[in-house]
Every structure is written in structure tokens, then in C-alpha cells.
Image (tube, rainbow, N blue to C red; front, side, top):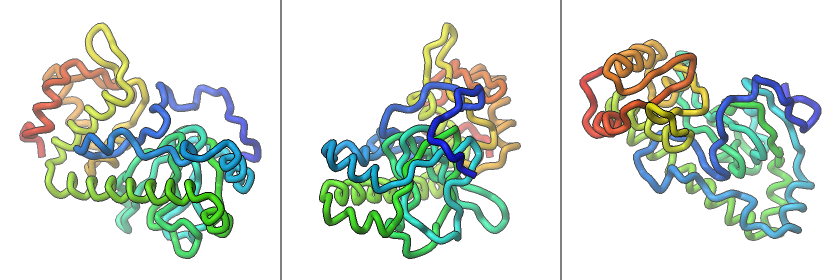
Length: 261
């Protein structure tokens, strides 16, 4: 359940690591243009327009692991992320999940429906303690004619998400799971990499299950694969922290795979 206050706690449970820059997203794609993230929804608005938009919304706090919206539930608008990280994913009847993306500050989640007329096609949970502004569909419909830049931002955001999910489908259909894991690790290196004496440390913690949900594999497969990469001297993995020792080896795997199935 969301907390009644919009003040984040300064507890150790806030996800470790440096947040991605404003507008960036974490997703599985081999298209460089997508890895920079979508346009910030608020960036093109004037100060007056931003104030009007935010005044019409409801600010909410979701603690790490809390559900923001649920697949199959009635859509009641969008959630503009002010702080934190929201994981959006699809859950199959079997219980398997595939992560569509992690969205950050300046992104909105809750689409593709904007005006609250249908049900959610996927779910969103707080991957770290997060602050969002909930904009109900009826409110958003009233604001769009009054703020043309908002309408353009929403269209650009939906178009970006469409390209992201198309790229994900292409990756799942044409790349081996080993290649997808290598691509994901390289993206994490680019987004969260911090120079280390022996390589590059991915400063934000991701569990083996998190990685599995992004590449379309099982947690057990990811655990075995990371262990094997450790034995090969490509990386070190311990308690969700990954130190990349040999980035060129990952790039080679991304292109051709290494025979792991």
C-alpha cells in the first residue's frame, strides 16, 4: 500500500547505487537510440503548465516491492515518476514473468491507455522506494486540450514505449538467451558502471531473478551462467553486485553467443 506521506524514508532499504540519469530507462534492446530513454514528459512544459499539471495530480509514495498498478485491473490514468524506479512487467497464467522495462524520473507508466477506459495490460511495481504523481484519466483528458505540449509529450512517450516493446519482441525472437544476458549486462555497465581497480562495477543491485525476468530465462539459468562467466574471468557476482572484469568478452558473446542454452 502507498504511504500517506510523499516523503521518502532515508533507510538502507532504498535501492543501492546511483540512479539512472533523468529520462533514462532500463530495457532489453540492441538499438542505441532506445537506450537513452524517452523524452521527459515535463521538460517541454512551461513552469506554469508544469504547475497546472502537478496540481491536478495526486502525489503518492510506493515503497520498494509495492504494486503501483496491476495487470487486468481497471485503468485509472497514468503515473508520472518523480523519484525512484518502477518495474513494468507481464505475468503469464503459468506464473512466469517478463520484464518490459524499468522506468525512471520523468517517465510515465500505466499506459498504453491514458484516459482510464480499459484495463491494464501489464503490472507495475516499485523497484525502489518511489514517488509518483497519479493523473487520473478524466483529469488528463481535460488537460490535453489546454496544454498542447503535454499532448505531444504523451504521444512521444507512447511511441517510444511502442518501439521499446517491439525491440524486446525482436530480441526474444532472434537472439539466444546467452546473447540477451550479455546485452543486458553491457547495458547495465553503461547505465550504472563505476570504475573499479579491476574493471567496472555495476553499482545498482539486481538479483538473479531480476536479470532472469529481463532476458526471458529462469533464475537458475542466470545463476549457472553468472557462475560460468565468473570461472571464465569475465565477471564476479556476489549478493546482487556484479563486477565486469572483461567487457570485450561480453561484447563478443552479444554478437555470437557462447554455446550456453
